[in-house]
Every structure is written in structure tokens, then in C-alpha cells.
Image (cartoon, rainbow over all chains, first blue to last red; front, side, top):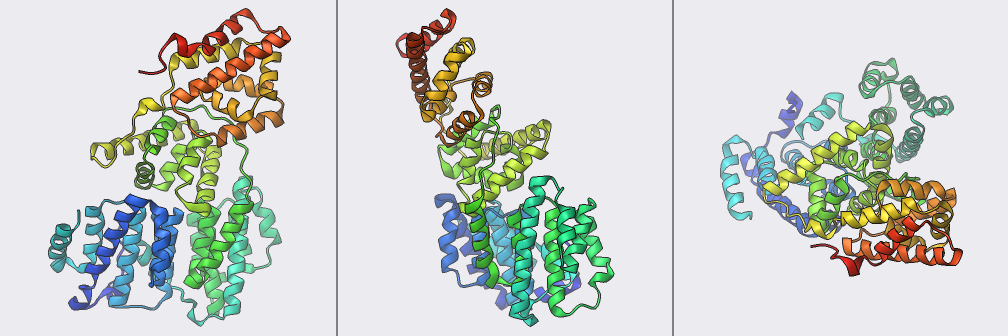
Length: 137
Length: 373
């Protein structure tokens, strides 16, 4: 259920150039999903060890541990809001959390991609979707 | 995802930045205490909460535990923390403690596993406490005692799990798509071997949590609820298979030969108590546990009912530890059991004619008929 509030909308706002950074993030999640299907979710532990973003590091380890759904959402939302981010860094971390929750749920790539391109904004989502689906098996 | 973020913003996001290290360490210790209370509460069906509330010195936690002891659900606990005067005029450190305790007690009242309670509470302290919480949970997982399980009557799901497990990625994917809650509820009605197959996907902390949750649901859910969860799980498998996302392994490999199972069960049911007790008391638990995979539940019940508790427990542990055997190996284990019974009967000059004839048929099964098509 989408439960918007004004502060959230304000904090998510950022420029179109910045939002282009979502492309590589989505590709990263496509790779992670592929890895879990091939090697299993415990393989995310080694990905977590290499991750530089603290939220991604923590999230990957939680997913490997079997935390998913609302529990994962609530834990990651708490971590996310512990930092006073806004604009592009906030949008990026929101998309990271969305990707982690989708990964934990075992979503197929088309679903994962659709959940994440939504953060790109309606005006650009379609073109990014076509671009990513052209690359994703 | 926006749901959790929006809700957290609406509650007023808590930032640990302005809070001293000492205070954060104290909140961490408090979180561990709440996780331990959650564990005790699950084990006791909530009976220990009043005692924990009474013993608690921290005002916020005591307030929440008293609510839980009165039977408050997650929504009421959340509401009480939101509107109680206890939440007014707090300094930054106490506000952070309040947010952490509130999240932990809401999780506890919703029946969440203690590891989830701890993760939710320590998230307020930032990622630097993640490893510390992980170490605490790993230590708990190492020290935890395996629960005494009764041998459950297997339905169709254990066979489906075995079949999926031929390709571990297929089983893991199905569990993920079904969701942890549904998977746990469905597996609560299966023997321990099925739970172990799934728990192995999560690493030590996650595996302990999955195993605990299955045991917890087993005591809380009715047979109908478990049946519904198993049907829903089977539906997930069907959908994945129909979508080409899953290929089930050859079911026949693990499907027992019903005629063999029937004959072996008949033999065990007809054998006199003294001979049966002697074979199972003195035999190799591992081999006997394997042979039990070729017996109907009524034969399990008879054998376990005849053995002293300690021996029955040893056998149950061996059943839990035993790998799932293909039908051919179940047959070999059943034949080994038949040979042991016949040898014992010859020595003691015991055993009814009907029973011994059945055991002879089992012993000679390979010569008489094919094991499987």
C-alpha cells in the first residue's frame, strides 16, 4: 500500500540528471538476483563483504539470513531514516531498500525492474525499462 | 517499500547521531534483554511476561511489558507508546530508547522471532551495531538446544520438499517466492528432515530462527491452518512450474514402494513386544532410523511407544539426522531390519509365525519383485 506523505515527497525530489544514476543500481540488482538463482542466497554474504554502501551491506546480510517482507522493510527503513538524507542520496537509498526487499521475495527480473524503474519517475521510466529489458535475460 | 518509510517518517524519524556512545551501548544491552524476554515468552506462551515486567527497572520497558502481560496486541502496544505521557518531554537519548523499545515490543507482541526483535531494535543504533547484534544472535544459536520433536505424520508436502530438494536452488526459490511465513506454517506440519532441508539455506542464525519458528507454529496452529498453508505452498509450486520457473525432479526416485511399506509395517505390527523392543533397543540407531523411512506412522507409534524414553529419543534424533533415502535404499534398510529380527527370533526362539513370515518376505523382497518401475 502506498502511503505518501508530504515530507517523503519532498525528500525524494531530485534532478533528472541525478536520477540517471538509478540505471547502474538496477543493473546491480539484476546481477544480484541472477547470482542468487545460480548460487543461492548465502552467496549474498560475499557480496555484502565487498559492498561499500553500509545500508546495502546490512541489507544483503539480512536477506541472506532469511529476513524478508515487512520485517525487512521495517528494519531497513529504520536504518535509512537514521541518516538525514534528502534528494538523490535519499532516492538512491530508497531504491536500494526496494531492491533488497524484491530480492528477498525472489521476484523475477521483470518484476524487480518494474519496481525499481518507478523511482525514475513516470516521464523517464518507460525508456529505462525498455533499455534494461533489452539487456536483461 | 514506501509504506515502511512513510510510516517511519510519520512517527518521527529517530537519528542516533546526537546520542552518546554510552547511551547507545545501554540501548543495545536493553535490546538483547528484550530479545531474551521474547524467547522466554514464546517458550512459555506469554506466561513469563508479568514476571519480567515486575523485575524490569527501566521505566519505558516496564510500561510496555506490563501492557503485554495484560494481553495487549501489537496495535495496542504501538498506540499506547504513541499517546502515553511517558513519551513526552524526553531527551534525545531517551527518545531513541523509546523508539527502539516500542519497535521491539510491537514485534514481540506480533509473535516475531527474537532475532527479528533484536534486529528491529538495534537498527535504531545504526549499522555500526549490526555485527554486534549478529554476534549475540550467533552465540544464542550455538547454545540453543534442539527442541524435542514428536514424529509427525507426513502428508504430501515432505515428498514435494524432497523432490524440490533434488535441485536445491529450486527448493530455495520456492521458499522465497512463497514467503517465509507461509513456508514456516506449511513446514510446521512436516517431520524435522523437511525443516532441516530448508533451514540449511539461511546460515546459522537464520537456520536457528527458521527451526524455532517451525516448532513455534507447530504448537500454535491448528491442523486445519497447517493444512491450508500446505495447500497454499503446493499452489505456489504449481504456479512456478506452470510458469516454467521450476522443474520438479523425478518423484519416483523418492516415492516409497507402497507394497513394501505395507509388508514391513504388517510385520512390525504383528511382532511380539519383547522381540521388537530387543531389536530396537540393541540395534544400530542409524540403520533403524533409515528402516523407519519404510514404515507407516502406526508402526512408528508402536515402536516408539514400546521403547524407554531415552532409547526412543536416541532413535528420534537418528531419524532427524538421517538423510532422505531414495526408495531403493529404504528397501535395503528395511531388509536389514528384517534380517536383524529374524536373527533375534532364531536365537530367542520367539516371534509369531505370521510376523516371521512377513519379515521373511521383506528380507527376500529383491528376489521376488522389482523395487520400482
